[in-house]
View (cartoon, rainbow, N blue to C red):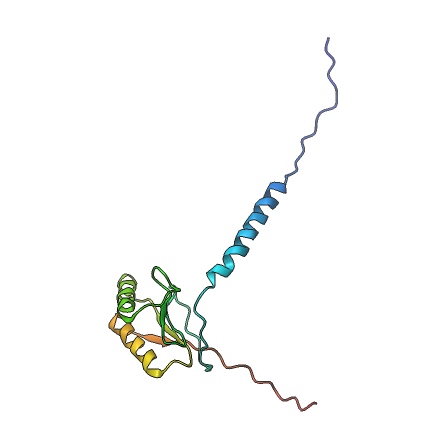
Length: 150
């Protein structure tokens, strides 16, 4: 005759969260490493002008950057951190606009760049099929309000 214990085992309803914490920490490290890489670009000093921001579009705009030395950089293509000549610029933008004609095109030029360099780039963009070309600026620095106290 076998005797069975009258005590029944209770089920444990706990979740082991240690593996989830490990996965979260790995993802955190990955994002911390890749975030600075996503914000690479060409350093330019934009003119300080107060202007209305453009409405949010469903597509990321084509941005042509002109640095202080007059070199052109395009945010689309094989290498966005390498300078591009006007002929390649026209071909690359025309290809992008052919697939998405409503793609906005913006020129981001250093304020030290001569006017002719920017205008020639805008002419190439329009020849590539851009119906409108916008200019990117920075807002002016906020002026300190005079409170009358010293």
